[in-house]
Length: 324
Image (cartoon, rainbow, N blue to C red; front, side, top):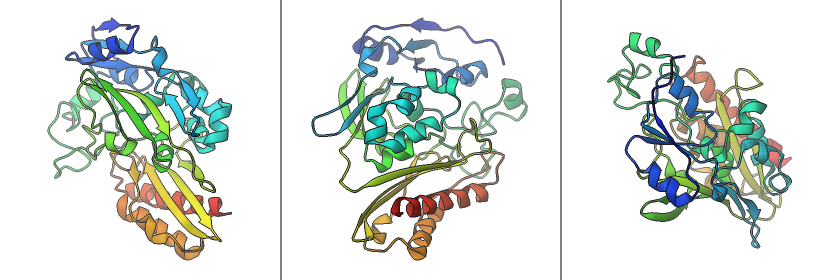
């Protein structure tokens, strides 16, 4: 690890102050730091200033509204999500996904907002400065060539949030604040399929809160993850499925994946399975939908085709488990 480059540290006491500081050129927002600080130490990021969000009470709320929806501040830690009784009762898959992130010490610092806005990852990018310099850097940072897809024109680094798939199938929205005001959008709208610029946030925009709508009666949501080491690894693939049955047949079905593409992917075409029984045929169709849409590349040491197959298996397995 290299010595950190010099930067100015700001510790705002209000959301308005944080938004103003974050809009400055060269500023980066700092929550738990489990994603950003390693990047700083590797020289991947060299911001002129860091805006520490730890004092902002507006980011730490966790409450249920009268309509049953759940509002979670972006500064709530993953350790809290993993152990909170309200989360466990309202959306247990979210607690399960939080428990699957890294190790205990990471979850004690890592935040919901940080997990949803984490950097994309690639074996050619998450390396030391000398390693990257020796290889001519890469398209994501300081280079002109993607080592994963040399003939391509975009970065294929993978987005690896465990939390995002659960929130996508749950229909979550996010509240964003910037100097120009506040807006609320579906979670899927803050992402784009470009590993070098995967967040579609406006300059200086801050994710403040996640709102999870009231669960449809009878709907169940499950989460599953595959990784090399069971204790703390990023996902080779992480999947979430939301299923509601009526008279033993699929009334609604949603599936989402992470760890394979440059954005968390809400699988298209699952409505075609409505009215089907949960059997080998419907499980195979869901798996085929996943296989057609996930696009893992050589961004990890694990072969892309293996990760692609794992994604399909996880989705199909969740479908069967939820139906049972």
